Image (tube, rainbow, N blue to C red; front, side, top):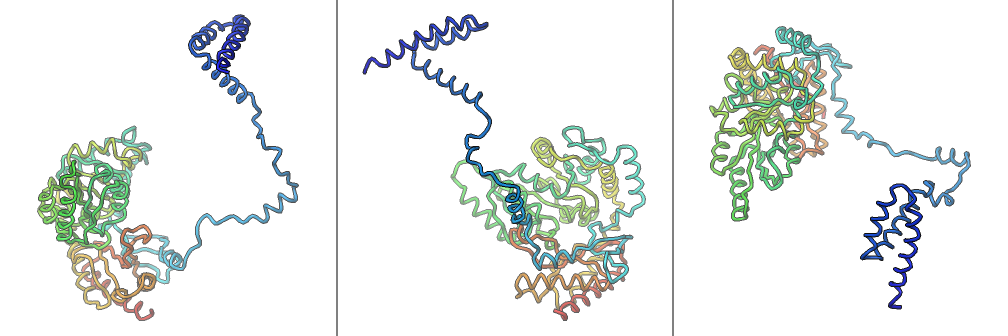
Length: 504
């Protein structure tokens, strides 16, 4: 029995020699024979194993592609097949609409025509409605010079860029637009994004990674929330505009990571003018805490840029803070400025890093060249102070609107007095459940529509919000209204609120 492996090896060797003599007659066989001899020389068992593998491979490639179990298939007649098809009930691709979904869809207006601050919507009982939902506070869309410039750029560049910036999508107007924004904000460089919404979700993960720590205001908007989620960083949320709570979180994080090897990078993330509340943080205090606890600051100026400050340079200008104190200024150009796209401004290293790493910049087509050209035009004029009086007038009108609305005992104004982005909640909703509160806001919006005002609720998707949705009414005040018209509008809004409350 002990000699069995040896005998098997000898038998295999003899048979292989006979096979090799036949095999030598095949062209190229000498190379294969040489490999087999060397392989078999010291390990006959290996030759047997390789031979079995060869047989398996041969059987595998020559085997029929038909299933071995085809004989087990059930043969159905045509009648049986038709019967099964008729009985099959596919599941719906999406769930059916709830009562709240239907209510929200009813609020969405279909605009048939628009002129300045007036709009005509489908199915409205009122011929024209005052539009209090447009983010273009200064009606740039109706500016004749901007329209003519857009037409001129389209004739030269065409409509779209058709490619990402890193490939062939960047035109000279995109580069000039970035330079205009950098000069306007007072930063070393600026990078232009094709979509405002994708800016924060792309910028934040560029710098904040797993293991880093973020200190975030709990009222930040959805794009920032998504950017935080994508960063996979440790997050400390502090109460809205509560600087004491922010400092407590900074102290807590420092104590947790002290003596544990690498000190994590720390980022404070907030907004210049909050989309969900219409107010601003104490930027001076945030800068002080940033320096004290060695953190970096990311400031979203989507709504404050073009609205706050003497020349519209945002919250930093209003607070008298140098832009160099803010590590990254991000934002959408489609809100306060009424333009298109997004941006991130800061140091040269910060901007150049994004040109390689940022997903929204690397893989998205650049914004249409004519829009970049229009952005440069508006920003350059703002830098020269051309729109300074407009900014002053808008904030003054916003203050008049706030003062008049504040007389209404049925609402709570949560936005700052000089903000054209006005947010208010209903006091009756303080003790109401979410469904009842949503219905009350719906009644206010629809009552206003019947009375010639196009209002909207604060745009939030409750299932995606980190802290739930705030059932509130949002007003976007156009600068084209006179002070008298603003006061009249405020009184009409109050009347609509009272009428809606009476019918609940």
